[in-house]
Length: 170
Ligand SMILES: [Zn+2]
Image: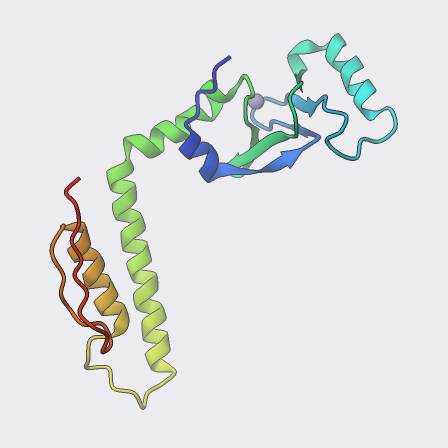
């Protein structure tokens, strides 16, 4: 079957690889048949192959090189290439992509708040320093906003030579 997940989603949520592991969304056991992949215990692979013959719906064997790749969404482990992905995991990606504008806005607000709090903590720990001047973080933030708008920026950052930032139009 074809993988319903995008490469971007896999890259974001893949966690690692294993000789044998379970998909917690459907209960299938996945294992690699690559005997050079790692530390199989004596008879372990053979007993998995035996079990897979008896209950083919509950096991998935991989013949390729390497390991079974797995990741996590919503606190549960899923296995890349599991037959249940379309039904169980793809909806998470559909949610992310459908609401991408709201999600980006959410991440931006949370990030800016975290930056502001970190900055306030920094200043609180150094009451002797003035806070009237725009801080370095303020400047970075403004520069990022300008960049997003595709504007030209000629400001000087902390005494360095002016930098010209020209963004190409999308
Ligand atoms: Zn599954």
